[in-house]
Image 1 (tube, rainbow over the protein chains, first blue to last red):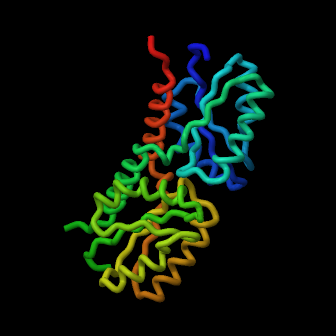
Image 2 (cartoon, chains in turn brown, purple):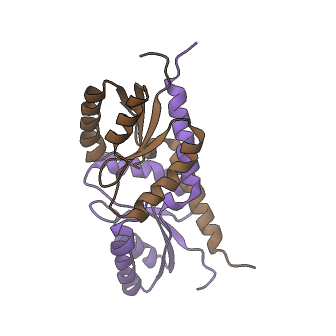
Image 3 (tube, rainbow over the protein chains, first blue to last red):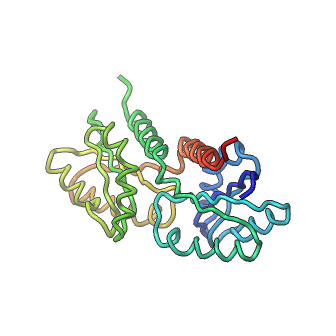
Length: 128
Length: 128
């Protein structure tokens, strides 16, 4: 591995429902604005696919990627399907792709959820 | 609506995979420790179900609930299945249940994801 910083790819499941994809694009926005070269990609049912993003990055010369799953927990997709996709893409584009844990396994998410709930409760309080 | 604070129920999808449920229980912990009376419930495939949690709360005299979905975006489950479950439970237990937006629609989550990604990048930096 060389000193090149990996490109971050935020991986969402994907859906044919555009509202669903819009929610993920909004969720990704603070990351995309803060991390140069970062992109969002979908596992299925929406574009850009992981293949599209790796293909475009590869043609720009990027060889290192870290895929951060926008999933709260790891199920079959993250244990089986995504590792298989990554293995195939590494071979096809001659790149190195690391799969990070799903965001929901990071303690920051639990704290953010607590803050959301406390805000939700405050919004239910009636004026005195 | 009276002045009673609603009981918070963190609703996860549920899975027969115990590792999946453990991740959600860990995610819920900061909320459960901070918000008195809050609980986690599963839509399907795991216990406690939403029915179990409302039934137990009802027997303790709690009449107001807010369900906060531990989902990143709203798909069919949150648009159709969960509202139908809530309607049926409100009638059966004579309680009032509010469905909050999924946590992923709150801007706090996007910022937490950014922090997770920046931490992930830092962990890849090689020592100078």
